[in-house]
Image 1 (tube, rainbow over the protein chains, first blue to last red):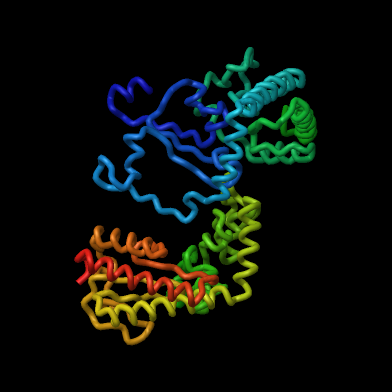
Image 2: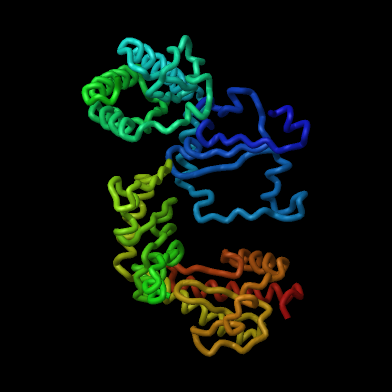
Length: 223
Length: 223
């Protein structure tokens, strides 16, 4: 894609709102060693406070300068532009992220959770599978395919229609409630790990999912 | 409008992002004693930190509840929903606003600035006029109509096309620079007063505009 866009003179934009400072201190572009023309950033960028940014090639960003090659300054008014508190929180967070270990720990914890969940699902013989990359983990229920052989595994041969299918709302709600009863709060069927999660947190999470499966089976929601 | 929308069963929405907690502790709806069906709020709401809110009729807002009359919960995911720091800043700001005097002072300062500017323009015989309401003041340059007789005056008989016309960019930039040289920073040709501005601030602003007119005249930008 980078080669094609460069050859055709098309601007390549990376949305690093989620991946930026998460998968790698340099974002997904740092991990994959690809330089896009423009990058959008938010979330970790502002250290937990609201904030976002656009960065990119000097000859494109110069549109924001008073005197530029486009002959017209691009306006970007905003009540919270340069909010000092968000900027201070961002500087503090990015200073920590730049040391590198936070992203590394988050990714390791993601791998540990995915692997541990798949071991649990096999042990309990439940039709669920976990997958994901970096610090993310997604559980797919009502899964009828083979169990993963490694962490690169993607269920349904990566068919988006099947991966993105609607999960039964009653099952999803019951799963969330069952996890909450065991002290764990998931985003639906997904989890994001951070640089301060520990192996103990992962063990506790896997134990909570184990209890949740038992609770859902007791209610006849899981075969 | 309120009577018509109520009769026709149309939802009336007030955008109080700017006016909320500014023109009156109860917003423009508090000032005009009109109750809309929905209200959008931001800016002062979050006490200088980023934040916004929607409020309104319980039978509409219930769309956000899990069990509601629409049969479906409206989703409203967001990374910064309920951001605790923005919420704390908002509570602190609204506690002050609720006492009432901040809005009152801001409105008084707005009136004082508009009146003082129009006295200045008449005294210096410059083709500018100031107008506005509540805590806002707008200067209209290149104005050829009658001078205002009171604070309700709107230039050009309130013709939007004339009020909203493009001001010469060179004049606008020179005016801003001239004001900055005299310690005052305007939003282009507009100003917003706050509850902590004082009569002394207004006098200083009017003196700065006076100096700016002299500077612009010296450069031949103002007749």
